[in-house]
Image 1: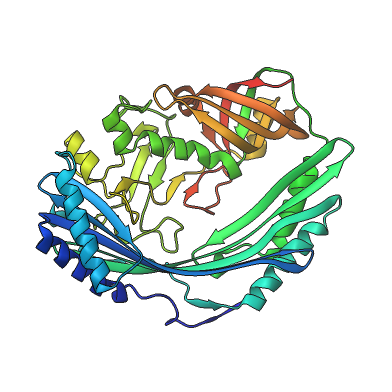
Image 2: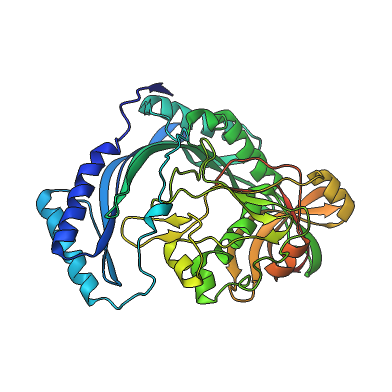
Length: 455
């Protein structure tokens, strides 16, 4: 599908000159302090339908963002024009906007003593030159594999994609570093129908390196098998059921955890976990890690959005919540140091985000857990989740399968499950089937008794 060409990827060093100039213009315009970020990315994706190319999307873009502080007043601006005149005007506009902004006592660059001094090589770049013909062949193979599954009538969005990017971040305090990264993807959605109606399901795979992806045939076949297994689905009667989330969707529990322990949620007082630091949130034995330094990791980065190194955390250690996820601003508000979780995009100040968030596998297999609960529901797809961030009340539309007599049986659809995440977290049990396939990874999870709205 590709050939190696290490000089083809965008270079972060080529972005540094523009940022140095931009910070100089900001200082000349009256900024007390400033930081800036630049990105340069290239992407290519190919999708097929009925064996023919349906869409080709090839793009390349370069963007630059500036944050300035005039005392405790801050503004952020961005542009895709890196000409000298544009950069100078951008800096002047940012300073003018900052002077009109309200004061923010927590607006600051990080302590210079905390800045990253060692930039690890995390092997985030596979500098392959993607060949559009080979990508088309891959997409065709995915589609053909899906269509080969009995009762599959259509395959949508059979596609292959690749991207390469470079970023550089620097600040008026002297930090200046960048890195390159790549991402590859394959996906398809399969559609099948019978007398009971039509169903749709999918499979996908992504990775920093091409060799991290599942095979094209395997993706198409899995999508086809998933959708045909769902044929004949029906609602179940409303009631209370033991609910298990398949690992494909179980990461949503960690996403909810990440949002609830982010610094901005804590400082606003809008988190259902705001009083839980240092307390048991999960059952004993459960560990959740966040590690920015995983080689080839989907969420890895050598430093955060403010130039801080970060580190690997056991966010949940033996069930106990050990830390918030903080950037500099939220840390200042809470009287705590940043945890290195600042996330930066081009046009706004640093937010907070996890990196490679993983719940450790449990001791029992999915089959052992199902055998133990006897009857319940195995949920494999979800849509329209609703979470009250203050209380933890949670509901989501789902489809999946009945668990009867300790085994997966008939498909179910058009139902809603609901509960409270404080209660769910406290009793949740991870299965042993963990696979690291995204930035947020969990094994399948037994959530325990939940209210089910069905027929």
